[in-house]
Length: 349
Image 1 (cartoon, rainbow, N blue to C red):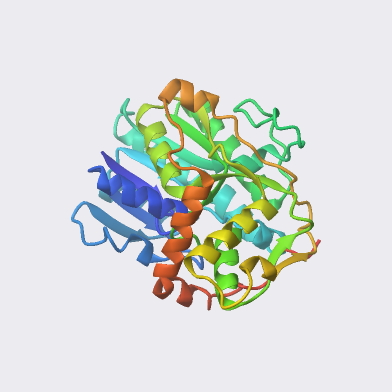
Image 2: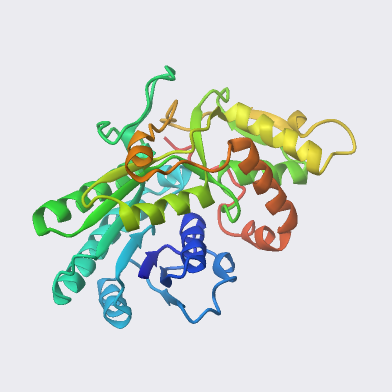
C-alpha cells in the first residue's frame, strides 16, 4: 500500500513512517518542517526507494494537489497539526490555520484526487486526533472517554482538533469520502520533542534543573507508548470500519506527580546522581490556565472489533524512553535551541 503521511517528521508521524516502512508499505512523508519537526526522526528509512519526502504546508492547496497527482497514494494518514497546548494559549492563530484550515485543504485535495481516480473502494482518509476533544473527566476511575462521549474542548488546541474531527465527519456524510478517525491518549517515547512533559523531565533532571509540575501534580493522564500507537493507527487504517472512530489508549493512568516520580526512579537506576535522588529536583509551578483534570480512554471498541491492546506497561515504556534519551544526546541537544523550547509557555490567560 502507498501511504501519504502528513506530519511524518513529527513525533507520532515519524513513528508511523518507520513502522509502515518496516511492514513493507511505500510512504510519502509530507511535512512543512515547522519548529517541532526533525528529519532525523526518519533518517533510518530516508534512503529506502519506497520512501519519498515532500516539504509542503497543508495550508497550501496547490502543493497538496501536486503531491496527490505526483504520488497517487492509496490512503492518507493525516497527522500534521500544531499540538502543544501551552503554545496554543499564547498563539491560537497558528492552531486555527493549521489544524482547521489545513485539514479542510487536505479533505478537499483528497476528495478531488479520489473523485478523479473514480472513487476507488479501497481509498481511506485516516484522521488522527486526540482525546482532549472530549474535555475533562471526574476522578471516578469507572468513567472514561468512549467514542460517544460529547465533545467539550477546553483549550485552543483541543478546540481546533475538535473542529477538524467535525470537518472529517462532515466530508464523509456530505461527499461520501471514505474516512476513519482515531482519538488517542497522551503519547510518549523516543523522538518526543523536548517541550512535552516526559522529555522535559528527563532532560531537566540530567541538567540538574528543577522538574516543573503544574499545580499539585494531581492531573491524571492515560499514557500510550508511541510505537504502540503507530501499530494501532496502521491497524485502523487497514481494518477499521468505514466511517468509524476508534479511541486508542495505553490503559496506563497516572497522575503527573506519579509519572514524574517514576521517571526519577528510572533515572536513579540508569544514571545515578552523585548524591540524592532526581526526585529532589521536583518543583511545583503555577497551573496551566484551563488545565483538564483527567483524561482516560475506554478502549473497548478497538479491542473488541480489531483485537488491539497496548504491548507495554507505562513502566516498561518509560524505561525504554529514558534509555533512548540517554543514548541520543546528539538528537535532542540541537532541538533545545529552537524557539520557546525549555521556556514556560501558556501562562497568559
